[in-house]
Amino acid sequence: MSKLEARDVNLFFGAHQALKNISLQMEKHTVTALIGPSGCGKSTFLRLFNRMNDLHNDMRLSGTILVDNKNIYQRSADVDALRKKVGMVFQKPNPFPKSIFENVAYGLRINGVRNKNYIEERVTRSLQQASLWDDVKDNLNRPALQLSYGQQQRLCIARALAVEPSVLLMDEPTSALDPASASTIEELIYELKIKYTIVVVTHNMQQAARVSDRTAFFYLGELVEYDETKIIFTHPTHQRTQNYVTGRFG
Amino acid sequence: MSKKLMQAVMFTLFRLLSLMVVCILFSIVGFIAYRGLAVLRPQFITGLPENGMTEGGIFPAIVGTLCLMTGSLLIAFPVGLLSGIYVSEFAPDNRLKRFIQIMTNSLAGTPSIIFGLFGMALFVNQLGFGDSILAGSLTLAILVLPVIIRSTEESLNAVNPAIRQASYALGATRWQTVYRALLPLALPDILSGLLVSFSRVSGETAPILFTVAAYYLPRMPSSVYDQVMALPYHLYVLSTSGTDPEATRSMAYGTALLLILIVLFFNVLTVLVRRLLSKYVNIK
Image (tube, rainbow over all chains, first blue to last red; front, side, top):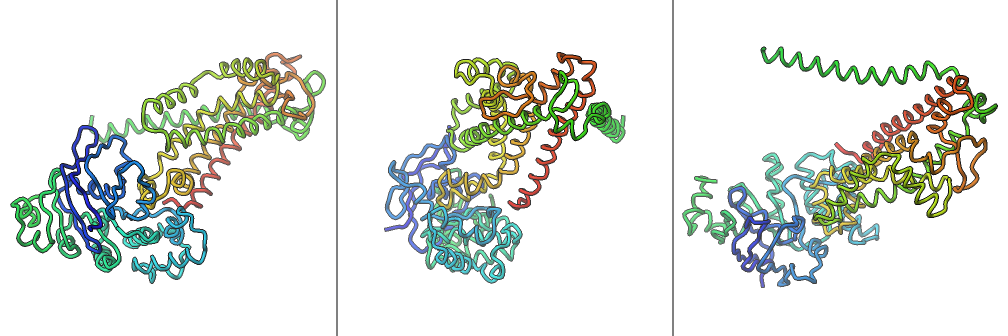
């Protein structure tokens, strides 16, 4: 049984078809990279799995999206529970203008956790997992916005991990960061896949090659090719994939 | 003309026009202060009107205006805040929402005398509150409601959308997102909208004319069903329809000055509260 699955997915925003007939399966504890030129639908595809596209009110969807073999778009589906299970990290770090501690505790508080010790334990653990603990342990009450950009992004990862999701969606998580911070995040992705299923949208080919097990190449709303990352980067089936990963277009 | 010269000409023009606005404001305030400062003594502020309002103080009018400000905002703030939150965060983006927005704007542009007549018809007569603080506060509340709704709505919309997404992505409901993530950030703006309404309420005359304001009532109100005197109406009475307008001229200027000082006080308070809150919520 695969962890995440899309079956025959077509997605429209108004009259514009953003995704065309996509079927894709992603296994547990793997990192899948979604690549393709801007506007190809990869971010939109990513956001299907935590229903963030629902915020657009002119969205229409056909086909099935399964998380743990459950259709997350059926009428009885609990969107808030889904988003707790499927965490997300955005392109630009978007910490709340609260303290470091309160940022990480946010997800716990909104899920009704009151136990102070448990919250402290989860905050500590999540900051450790996001390799931010050593940077911030001296003062967790500092405003999150005083952290560097790279630290803020790791804080956002910690915030997502605090509610114990099993999937982590990352939408170009390093594109706004300097190279050193980006490589810290990449290492983190590599470590996190032991516990989580990770899907990462990226424009950076080296990054896709380094961190992912499988890679999906999107072009104009279609899934051109989906295979093991090694194969996509060395012997892709389609000429278009070859051109894109070697930087001849995009 | 060279583009540098053009820029110099335009900027000079802008500067002169801005300066003119400042001059107008200063000359109004200056003139009133010049004519009114002499009467602004302690017993003018704390005393009762005497001798056909030609002597004594304006204390009942000050108390009346403060009662109306408090009363109207106790009603308008919760209603306006919740409506603004509804329109910004909960209402589906459809015709109904746009209809509500257009209606809110029209309400904001309605002449205040209309509110006065409406308040008299509904609160004073139909609901039988009589000329009272209650009727006056309700009328003023309707008057400032659109201001509060719009400022709430705009303040929430001005919050970085990334914050909203971050909250939803963690499994927060809409209400949790509003309450925990958006409101703290929007609060400084919402409160400045509130304080603007405060100034507005303090100076409105037409809405209270038929709903609460007393011509002469030298005692303190004992319940919300009492009539009160109010500063703007008292000013009108002193300068046009008092027992002896010539004799009360300086008292009218004193009253006007006091009204301006109250408005000024709330504007300064707005700036201070904004600063304090912005620091507190730590927006960069």
